[in-house]
Amino acid sequence: MAGYDFDVKVRTATEDALLRRLLHGMQLGCRQRGVTLRYRRVEGGYCVTVDGPLTNIQASRTPLTIALGAMAEVVDVPLPRARRLQIGRRILRGYVRGAWDITTSVLDTARMLDGTPGSYVFDAVEDQVIQYRLDGLTSILEAWQNDHAPSEQALEELHAVAELTMGFLLGEHWDDRSFSEQAAEMVTQGLMTADHRDVLIELKNRRRAVRHHLATMSRDELAARLPRVLAAIHAIVARLPA
Image 1: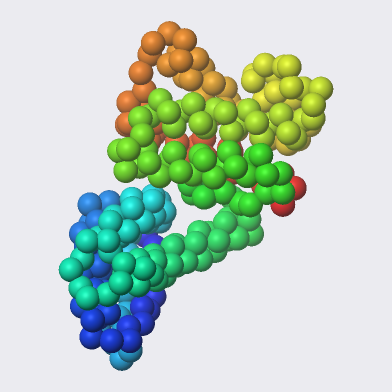
Image 2: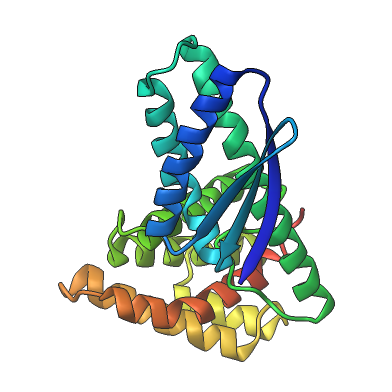
């Protein structure tokens, strides 16, 4: 479980009315995603407390962004639209910043302990193509967590990111080799453990069955496989230039 607080300042009674309605809506949205959000009035604004599994908090970012924007658009308070949206973004900044601070501390602690967390958020890397795909994977996993993307789509993106990052580490002359050959060479060069290789080979085999043989992947199956797959991908990403 993860938990943190953040403050949201208000300047006028009208802003206070808007903020209370937005926070109430956000509270309901968080509850639907297994996250507890509470808020209380303090001097100068509100103190917001967030509690829940870190993965749920991370995965709620995108749907809450959409929902808060929509609420700020339609709430009946005498404030300009731009100001209403600005106040909505103020809440989101606190929510996202708190989640990111915890995610960063988890990554740092994992490195100190020579471990790997199963976070949906990955370390920043130097190569912009890979960074784009990692950000895309984070978005797909968030959508999957919230039942907005099928397991098969998440499976495809996990496979693509694993293949892309292994190919980058091995170099251009490995581009035409198979996924299995790349994984084996990663172990030979000391870039990946044999356990992670086996996990990624299983991923590749399931992806082939789904893509080419009309198999399906249930949500429960992906949820069971995901921690080990994410551990393998995090370990690879940790070797990329930052």
